[in-house]
View (cartoon, rainbow, N blue to C red):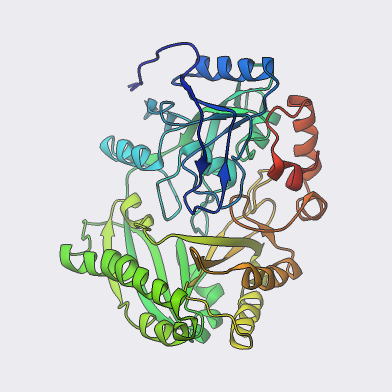
Length: 447
């Protein structure tokens, strides 16, 4: 079965000119022009036209990266019309989807076919290409990031060629382009491995910090998907364990679900963050109250309704991937940092895991991984806190999330990634003139 968007024109709707901003509002770009192609052919035409005019090219998703990974002063390719599920192959267990399709639309379409991704992150506003290209991940003992669930992709390269890439066709390009930062070309479609839809039971439970860290290895080993949030200025955490079950569906009640997901996690939290921004001294007291507000609950639903949740409070974020064995030590150092400093942190610290994978620039490349993510409410000064947290992360051989704030450069990253040179050599071959470069890529990949 195939579902397609209509194709019209030869160069995409546009061109238009105007500033582009990311979701958090911390990145603004002013491209010379922007287009919204509706097909691979229109992507090719846009790239060739940009080359003829000497413009660099970047493709943007929905702007959920906190880094300027998609920023350009050349041609900006917008995702608005490059959307839709192109085919569902139940026998092969795959779905092929246009690169600009939001994850929300993909998940809803899969559910309509009784299918699901194996794992996903906790929001689904991103486009499939933006999410895979920057390393979006959830948490999992055995299942890895969205890029690791990719089985094929279509790539428009700097000379306008279209490469079909998979383990059997252009395998070296496929290996790298699954998580390519937009440095190798413009992805026009992706194919994901999917499986028959299953029930997922979530158990959310408050737990003291010392108990979570003492039992961390046990909790990771015993659950398919384990994560927790530590509330700075407190000894309190909220844990979440997701495991497959036989069902039946038992979603959160309409009222209780609204209280937890909208009122407490978004409405009251938004107010608490706003008060904390205006009166930083109030943050520790607010944290103690808010960390006790969430109660234990258990519910069962189809995967995307359990993995994902609404995130309406805007923030900036830095996340580092560390060797799994460093989790407890690094988190303890981060807790000590907050306790012995003047930092006032209103956002919880998020802790997730991933198994090792074989993608050159994956943050989990070649090693079992723990992710530590620090956040600050949008509009709150974050530089000193993030810098201090980053010193802890890098002391533990941390790798920064490609779409989240960090200060690392190519010299550091070449040491952090054993296959870094493999990626940059492929970039040299596919884009020798740096058609897809921008300031961020020059910093993290070199030039």
